[in-house]
Image (spheres, rainbow, N blue to C red):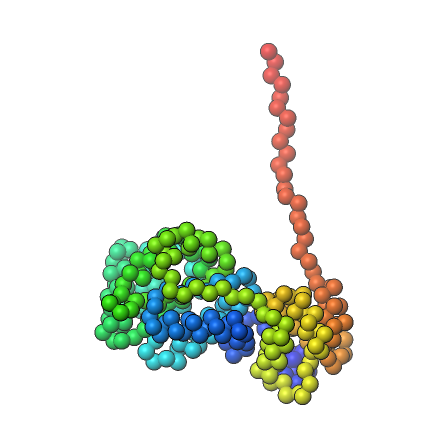
Length: 291
């Protein structure tokens, strides 16, 4: 029997997997999701969502995907691993997502033209909204960003034919800010910040209820919640990890509620990263040369 069954739960409440049903809409995430939906509905073109590691970017992407896939006039596509060695390889991936038939030995130009025809057919003739979301966008090569800029040029007098959403870590910001032609095309920029202490309490209660908890009292004391927030700085991934360990601690130590002392105990036993001294290569002294 899993630990969460022993606590009267039906599912694991604090998994770090990006399950949209466990996605807590904080003020930050709600604002980002709302602005994304507006920009996509208005067909503004390019949206960029950034944030530090563990701020819930990927889960936000999955939530957006869930919302948009219920829209009959939206064609939603997602790239999860955006590492490409050539522009042609990237274009071939997009063509595959769009279910395009392109001749064998096609050139990059062939793919671009096929994508343009697809966007015109779906976006103009059929009245659809074509959305392409790229997760982990900070690892996109510059030549792919330039290719995306070209695809964003396809537009009518009223709207962009491709709705592009880039989701990435903060190192994406200096890269795209240096690309003036790309930067100027961004219709919506948003940086996700960590949760405040009150939202941490709301997130814990929300996830427990989603997991099937029906108890009247919370499984976490207020002091425990504040200690968790202090230690994790409000980052959703770190929150989920520490809360998961806390519920395990209830089972291991035969307790009924997570208090500050238990949280401190779990924090104290955390394995910290080890600073490894840089490896130096021994260079022998120069040999004296006889005159």
